[in-house]
Length: 98
Image (tube, rainbow, N blue to C red; front, side, top):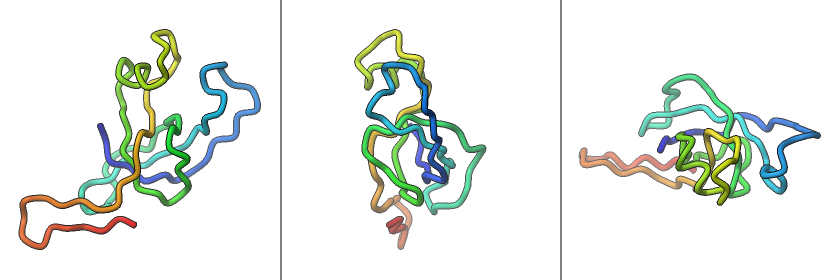
């Protein structure tokens, strides 16, 4: 799983049947401090995320297809949750992302 920030909404008037009812979003991976950490990628939204939201993304084909419930879904990444804050073992490490 990856921590990411939603940075864009992708308009697709024609898309695979399994995507119906789900937005396609552009997400930017971030580190535990909310700083950019890698290249952006496309993810199918299962939680009604919006631009600027910090989200939890499954970025692995097999696990992503399990979320869809179809073994043959053409999907590589899925947004599955919102992130409000991150707390690590370091002192003063709570980072509020909302």
